[in-house]
Image: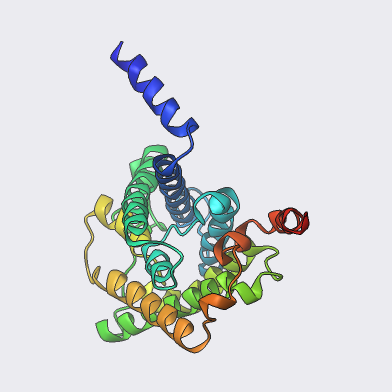
Length: 277
Protein backbone atom coordinates (compact mmCIF):
# COMPACT_ATOMS: atom_id res chain seq x y z
CA UNK A 1 0.00 0.00 0.00
CA UNK A 2 2.75 2.45 0.92
CA UNK A 3 4.69 1.69 -2.27
CA UNK A 4 1.57 2.23 -4.38
CA UNK A 5 0.96 5.58 -2.72
CA UNK A 6 4.57 6.56 -3.33
CA UNK A 7 4.37 5.65 -7.02
CA UNK A 8 1.07 7.49 -7.37
CA UNK A 9 2.47 10.59 -5.69
CA UNK A 10 5.59 10.62 -7.86
CA UNK A 11 3.55 10.08 -11.04
CA UNK A 12 1.24 12.94 -10.09
CA UNK A 13 4.24 15.17 -9.34
CA UNK A 14 5.92 14.69 -12.72
CA UNK A 15 2.71 14.82 -14.77
CA UNK A 16 1.17 17.96 -13.29
CA UNK A 17 2.33 21.38 -14.44
CA UNK A 18 3.91 23.76 -11.98
CA UNK A 19 7.10 24.95 -10.34
CA UNK A 20 7.62 21.77 -8.34
CA UNK A 21 7.45 19.62 -11.46
CA UNK A 22 10.04 21.81 -13.16
CA UNK A 23 12.38 21.54 -10.18
CA UNK A 24 12.07 17.75 -10.05
CA UNK A 25 12.47 17.24 -13.80
CA UNK A 26 15.44 19.58 -14.20
CA UNK A 27 17.09 18.10 -11.11
CA UNK A 28 16.68 14.57 -12.47
CA UNK A 29 18.06 15.67 -15.84
CA UNK A 30 21.13 17.22 -14.23
CA UNK A 31 21.70 14.18 -12.03
CA UNK A 32 21.41 11.73 -14.94
CA UNK A 33 23.46 13.95 -17.23
CA UNK A 34 26.30 14.27 -14.72
CA UNK A 35 26.15 10.56 -14.02
CA UNK A 36 26.45 9.72 -17.72
CA UNK A 37 29.31 12.20 -18.15
CA UNK A 38 31.36 10.72 -15.30
CA UNK A 39 30.48 7.13 -16.20
CA UNK A 40 31.40 7.36 -19.90
CA UNK A 41 34.26 9.80 -19.41
CA UNK A 42 35.97 7.76 -16.71
CA UNK A 43 35.28 4.49 -18.49
CA UNK A 44 37.38 5.84 -21.34
CA UNK A 45 40.35 6.07 -18.95
CA UNK A 46 40.37 2.35 -18.13
CA UNK A 47 43.37 0.79 -19.82
CA UNK A 48 43.55 -2.77 -18.50
CA UNK A 49 41.04 -4.53 -20.77
CA UNK A 50 43.25 -4.90 -23.82
CA UNK A 51 43.25 -1.27 -24.96
CA UNK A 52 45.43 1.37 -23.32
CA UNK A 53 43.89 4.71 -24.29
CA UNK A 54 46.12 7.52 -25.47
CA UNK A 55 45.85 11.05 -24.13
CA UNK A 56 44.01 12.17 -27.27
CA UNK A 57 41.60 9.25 -27.03
CA UNK A 58 40.75 10.13 -23.43
CA UNK A 59 40.18 13.82 -24.19
CA UNK A 60 38.02 13.07 -27.24
CA UNK A 61 36.02 10.59 -25.17
CA UNK A 62 35.27 13.23 -22.53
CA UNK A 63 34.37 15.78 -25.19
CA UNK A 64 32.03 13.38 -26.97
CA UNK A 65 30.50 12.39 -23.62
CA UNK A 66 29.68 16.06 -23.05
CA UNK A 67 28.11 16.13 -26.51
CA UNK A 68 25.91 13.13 -25.68
CA UNK A 69 24.71 14.66 -22.41
CA UNK A 70 23.84 18.02 -23.98
CA UNK A 71 21.98 16.30 -26.81
CA UNK A 72 20.01 14.20 -24.31
CA UNK A 73 19.20 16.78 -21.64
CA UNK A 74 19.98 20.22 -23.06
CA UNK A 75 16.33 20.94 -23.84
CA UNK A 76 15.28 19.92 -20.32
CA UNK A 77 17.79 21.45 -17.91
CA UNK A 78 20.26 23.15 -20.30
CA UNK A 79 22.67 20.35 -19.35
CA UNK A 80 25.09 22.31 -17.18
CA UNK A 81 26.40 19.12 -15.47
CA UNK A 82 29.00 21.41 -13.91
CA UNK A 83 28.68 23.66 -10.84
CA UNK A 84 31.06 26.18 -12.44
CA UNK A 85 28.74 26.62 -15.43
CA UNK A 86 25.77 26.89 -13.09
CA UNK A 87 27.53 29.64 -11.12
CA UNK A 88 28.17 31.49 -14.37
CA UNK A 89 24.51 31.14 -15.37
CA UNK A 90 23.49 32.79 -12.08
CA UNK A 91 25.83 35.72 -12.78
CA UNK A 92 24.29 36.08 -16.24
CA UNK A 93 20.76 35.94 -14.84
CA UNK A 94 19.85 32.66 -16.50
CA UNK A 95 19.29 30.81 -13.23
CA UNK A 96 18.23 31.90 -9.75
CA UNK A 97 20.19 30.98 -6.63
CA UNK A 98 17.54 28.43 -5.48
CA UNK A 99 17.64 26.81 -8.93
CA UNK A 100 21.43 26.73 -8.75
CA UNK A 101 21.28 24.94 -5.39
CA UNK A 102 19.05 22.24 -6.92
CA UNK A 103 21.47 21.90 -9.82
CA UNK A 104 24.44 21.69 -7.47
CA UNK A 105 22.89 18.91 -5.38
CA UNK A 106 21.87 16.97 -8.49
CA UNK A 107 25.34 17.29 -10.00
CA UNK A 108 27.06 16.04 -6.84
CA UNK A 109 24.74 13.03 -6.61
CA UNK A 110 25.13 12.32 -10.32
CA UNK A 111 28.92 12.35 -10.08
CA UNK A 112 28.92 9.87 -7.22
CA UNK A 113 26.41 7.64 -9.04
CA UNK A 114 28.32 7.74 -12.32
CA UNK A 115 31.64 6.63 -10.88
CA UNK A 116 29.89 4.11 -8.65
CA UNK A 117 28.31 2.51 -11.72
CA UNK A 118 31.76 2.30 -13.34
CA UNK A 119 32.98 0.35 -10.30
CA UNK A 120 29.94 -1.93 -10.54
CA UNK A 121 30.51 -2.89 -14.18
CA UNK A 122 34.33 -3.12 -14.00
CA UNK A 123 36.04 -5.89 -12.01
CA UNK A 124 38.21 -4.40 -9.28
CA UNK A 125 41.40 -6.00 -10.59
CA UNK A 126 40.82 -4.36 -14.00
CA UNK A 127 39.91 -0.88 -12.81
CA UNK A 128 43.30 0.53 -13.76
CA UNK A 129 44.69 3.13 -16.11
CA UNK A 130 47.35 0.79 -17.48
CA UNK A 131 49.30 -2.27 -16.48
CA UNK A 132 50.58 -0.75 -13.24
CA UNK A 133 48.71 -1.25 -10.01
CA UNK A 134 46.91 2.08 -9.94
CA UNK A 135 43.36 1.01 -9.18
CA UNK A 136 42.99 3.92 -6.75
CA UNK A 137 43.86 6.51 -9.40
CA UNK A 138 41.48 5.80 -12.29
CA UNK A 139 40.01 9.11 -13.51
CA UNK A 140 41.33 10.94 -10.43
CA UNK A 141 42.62 14.39 -11.33
CA UNK A 142 46.15 15.17 -10.12
CA UNK A 143 48.48 18.13 -10.49
CA UNK A 144 51.58 17.27 -12.52
CA UNK A 145 54.46 17.02 -10.00
CA UNK A 146 56.53 19.37 -12.15
CA UNK A 147 54.18 22.33 -11.65
CA UNK A 148 53.17 24.14 -8.48
CA UNK A 149 49.73 24.23 -6.88
CA UNK A 150 49.35 27.89 -7.86
CA UNK A 151 50.15 27.10 -11.48
CA UNK A 152 47.61 24.28 -11.37
CA UNK A 153 45.01 26.61 -9.88
CA UNK A 154 45.65 29.18 -12.62
CA UNK A 155 45.39 26.57 -15.37
CA UNK A 156 42.10 25.19 -14.06
CA UNK A 157 40.79 28.75 -13.83
CA UNK A 158 41.97 29.68 -17.34
CA UNK A 159 40.57 26.55 -18.98
CA UNK A 160 37.20 27.00 -17.26
CA UNK A 161 37.28 30.70 -18.18
CA UNK A 162 37.41 29.68 -21.85
CA UNK A 163 34.69 27.05 -21.41
CA UNK A 164 32.44 29.59 -19.68
CA UNK A 165 33.19 32.09 -22.43
CA UNK A 166 31.79 29.64 -24.96
CA UNK A 167 28.66 29.24 -22.82
CA UNK A 168 28.25 33.02 -22.56
CA UNK A 169 28.51 33.35 -26.34
CA UNK A 170 26.03 30.55 -26.98
CA UNK A 171 23.53 32.07 -24.54
CA UNK A 172 23.96 35.59 -25.96
CA UNK A 173 20.72 36.76 -27.61
CA UNK A 174 22.77 38.24 -30.46
CA UNK A 175 23.97 34.73 -31.30
CA UNK A 176 20.50 33.20 -31.55
CA UNK A 177 20.83 32.52 -35.29
CA UNK A 178 24.05 30.53 -34.83
CA UNK A 179 22.74 27.79 -32.58
CA UNK A 180 23.19 24.72 -34.80
CA UNK A 181 25.17 21.86 -33.30
CA UNK A 182 25.49 23.39 -29.82
CA UNK A 183 26.26 19.94 -28.41
CA UNK A 184 29.17 19.56 -30.84
CA UNK A 185 30.48 23.03 -30.03
CA UNK A 186 30.69 22.29 -26.32
CA UNK A 187 31.99 18.76 -26.90
CA UNK A 188 34.89 19.86 -29.09
CA UNK A 189 35.63 22.80 -26.78
CA UNK A 190 36.04 20.39 -23.87
CA UNK A 191 38.16 18.06 -26.02
CA UNK A 192 40.44 20.88 -27.19
CA UNK A 193 40.94 22.29 -23.69
CA UNK A 194 41.52 18.85 -22.18
CA UNK A 195 44.04 17.97 -24.89
CA UNK A 196 46.05 21.12 -24.12
CA UNK A 197 45.74 21.41 -20.34
CA UNK A 198 45.32 17.73 -19.47
CA UNK A 199 49.04 16.97 -18.98
CA UNK A 200 49.28 19.81 -16.45
CA UNK A 201 46.25 19.24 -14.19
CA UNK A 202 44.01 16.65 -15.82
CA UNK A 203 41.92 19.63 -17.01
CA UNK A 204 38.86 18.95 -14.90
CA UNK A 205 37.08 22.31 -15.43
CA UNK A 206 34.30 20.71 -13.39
CA UNK A 207 34.34 20.26 -9.59
CA UNK A 208 31.96 17.28 -9.58
CA UNK A 209 33.85 15.53 -12.38
CA UNK A 210 36.75 15.39 -9.90
CA UNK A 211 34.56 14.80 -6.83
CA UNK A 212 33.11 11.41 -7.76
CA UNK A 213 36.46 9.68 -8.41
CA UNK A 214 37.97 11.39 -5.33
CA UNK A 215 35.22 10.09 -3.05
CA UNK A 216 35.26 6.51 -4.34
CA UNK A 217 39.07 6.29 -4.33
CA UNK A 218 39.67 8.43 -1.23
CA UNK A 219 42.17 10.56 -3.14
CA UNK A 220 42.19 14.21 -2.02
CA UNK A 221 45.59 15.52 -3.07
CA UNK A 222 45.14 19.15 -4.18
CA UNK A 223 41.42 18.51 -4.53
CA UNK A 224 40.64 22.09 -3.50
CA UNK A 225 42.19 23.28 -6.77
CA UNK A 226 39.41 21.58 -8.71
CA UNK A 227 36.81 23.62 -6.87
CA UNK A 228 38.39 27.04 -6.55
CA UNK A 229 39.96 27.00 -10.02
CA UNK A 230 36.88 26.17 -12.13
CA UNK A 231 34.40 28.20 -10.07
CA UNK A 232 36.76 31.19 -9.97
CA UNK A 233 37.37 30.95 -13.71
CA UNK A 234 33.64 30.74 -14.46
CA UNK A 235 32.91 33.69 -12.19
CA UNK A 236 35.58 35.85 -13.80
CA UNK A 237 34.49 34.84 -17.30
CA UNK A 238 30.76 35.46 -16.79
CA UNK A 239 31.28 38.77 -14.96
CA UNK A 240 33.70 39.95 -17.64
CA UNK A 241 31.38 38.96 -20.48
CA UNK A 242 28.38 40.59 -18.83
CA UNK A 243 30.33 43.78 -18.11
CA UNK A 244 32.15 44.15 -21.43
CA UNK A 245 29.94 42.43 -23.99
CA UNK A 246 26.54 42.23 -22.28
CA UNK A 247 23.41 43.76 -23.77
CA UNK A 248 20.82 45.84 -21.93
CA UNK A 249 17.73 44.03 -20.70
CA UNK A 250 15.55 46.31 -22.79
CA UNK A 251 17.30 45.02 -25.91
CA UNK A 252 16.62 41.37 -25.15
CA UNK A 253 13.66 39.53 -26.59
CA UNK A 254 11.23 37.36 -24.70
CA UNK A 255 12.99 34.19 -25.84
CA UNK A 256 15.85 33.56 -23.44
CA UNK A 257 19.27 32.87 -24.95
CA UNK A 258 19.64 29.64 -23.02
CA UNK A 259 16.39 28.26 -24.36
CA UNK A 260 17.19 29.42 -27.88
CA UNK A 261 20.61 27.79 -27.79
CA UNK A 262 19.25 24.36 -27.02
CA UNK A 263 15.81 24.55 -28.63
CA UNK A 264 16.48 26.41 -31.85
CA UNK A 265 13.96 24.29 -33.71
CA UNK A 266 11.17 26.05 -31.80
CA UNK A 267 12.12 29.55 -32.97
CA UNK A 268 10.19 29.66 -36.28
CA UNK A 269 7.04 28.33 -34.65
CA UNK A 270 7.21 30.89 -31.83
CA UNK A 271 7.80 33.72 -34.27
CA UNK A 272 4.82 32.65 -36.37
CA UNK A 273 2.58 32.67 -33.32
CA UNK A 274 3.71 36.22 -32.48
CA UNK A 275 2.94 37.46 -35.98
CA UNK A 276 -0.64 36.20 -35.98
CA UNK A 277 -3.23 38.96 -35.33
